[in-house]
Length: 224
Image 1 (cartoon, one colour):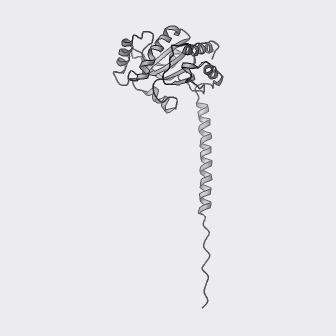
Image 2 (cartoon, rainbow, N blue to C red):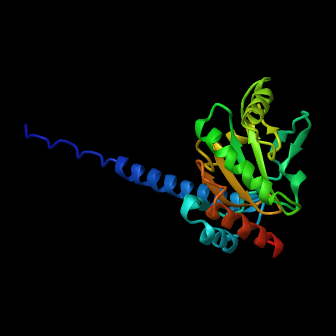
Image 3 (cartoon, helix red, strand yellow):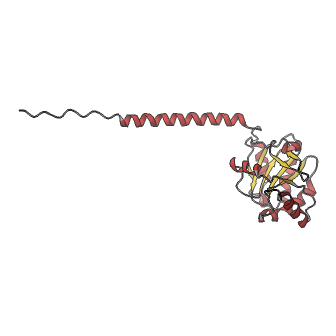
């Protein structure tokens, strides 16, 4: 009896399947990226203001060298907090003013060190077209009391007390990768649109700090 050759092995389709699935995944990822990109573009609260951000950046030297220009279209009109009497407020309530929105807490050592400079800056520049707007983030029912106690203790009479004891506003900044820790300061135009972000403290009551504020006020005066 003659030997029979074994039947030819069936050709595996596994490599082709892997390649096909891989290409499909890449295509899906690209489609998803395009979809999210388009969605993000349409979801911007503000127009992109690269030129205005660059002007702020040119003024941010020395003590303010860490100020990061953005102008990417993020807006904060809906950012919510409370005033000293517990009334609900948003950034939209300050429409028409350029803002330095400073997020701080009484337990934050760099924040405590920065507040006197912000208070002095507010004394010089708070007006119809500009405002230093601090938002305290001491959490819980006693948060507003801790903020007031600190202000009184330090004799900070030029800064209003606004609070977000829920921490919600700052959590959104963290989620959006705008901020990491405290203090964080947002430089906003008169429509609540972000032009720059500073992570960490700065000596705002200095020629460098005043240069940034004067530049911001000038931009607002020109309709930025």
